[in-house]
Length: 467
Ligand code: NAD
Image 1 (cartoon, rainbow, N blue to C red):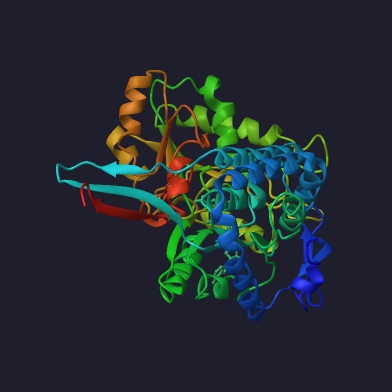
Image 2: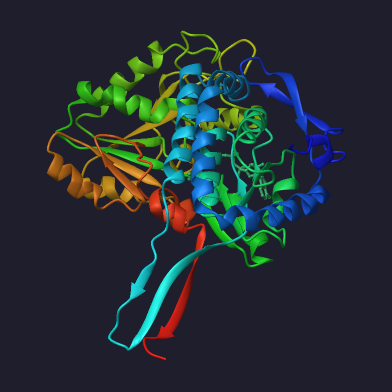
């Protein structure tokens, strides 16, 4: 019989903070505001659950598969709550729930490989893999469920236990997910804690944590790395991006414009690896701006629960203010809005889908991460100039090259300084591939077997071949 939440977290339910529906700007529920001093008991329980969980790989596989089924069975409730607190259209929430279940199922069946070292010496040397212990997973508000699963599914599959902290902007769907997963996982193998800062900071520096896996902004990532240094725990950081899409002079604009638009605007542009800058050849620039602006002007913006909405609100008030600020600064510096450029009237955090042209190359909307429904389109004269500009920020998450000659496009994609480069696509990821940013976009590798090994340590057994 699982211990009740009240017994596991005495005092936890008493202090609460409001959770806002971004479609209305009004609080619609609350979540427990756990205090940092509660983490000692949480991490201690995660430690005590670890030996049982790591001991039996077959039981882990069965439990994770069952967890995937439980997530699918709760899909309606999870998706609706996710849309309510995050803002994304319901269809995108369903897709996120499906990806959450898919991650559990993928890692359930993945096991590390023991390797024998063969180097000519008369010894037997074997590399086996061991789990690390309690893992802290800290995630942002843009994809609360699937980013959490990207962390806890490989960590649990590797035999670790996990303490998961969602963003205070989106704690509710993760709490529901916690109760859904509790039907499949042993107690204390996964614990969700919710609360405002300094809860995350304290979790990242907790001496009982052996691996901090963080997804969020570059600046918080630096703080997390410093905090984790106190206990020398392993750190994986999946940070911000400022992905460029480079269009080549043989691109078929009509053919790619829809894909390009959604690569920038899905989830209201709040995607780490969204297209955040477009570079178009000077001769095609006006056509590209016009084609993207047409999409931006005709897309239906509305509350995520409205079945007609293709674009929802921005998730939270500070993010909306940031988007408004970088847009206004660009406009003040000489940019022109070919579409949008302003907040939408009425309640909620809605911003008109915006295409910017004539943007000064040094504008913050180009050099920084806007993380919203605003896209600058910049002209270039030579391919070298475009590649230099694409590589010219501190970020290095993804990038893409678009053209008709695929070999030529791939050769340009090879020159992008990032973790993933696409041709005629952007932000398409397989569960089986590695996902890693370079420069300020991250440290460590997630995804596929690499994500599993990121949650394991090698353990070598060395013995002579004869006594
Ligand atoms: P954020 O850095 O503000 O917050 C991320 C998480 O860290 C939240 O849970 C937050 O509560 C917590 N946090 C805040 N301060 C902390 C501290 N001092 N110590 C520990 N934890 C702390 O990011 P955000 O605004 O929630 O998310 C947007 C950012 O996330 C964007 O930069 C986006 O690109 C990035 N992101 C990256 C990826 C990726 O895979 N590379 C994926 C999604 C989002």
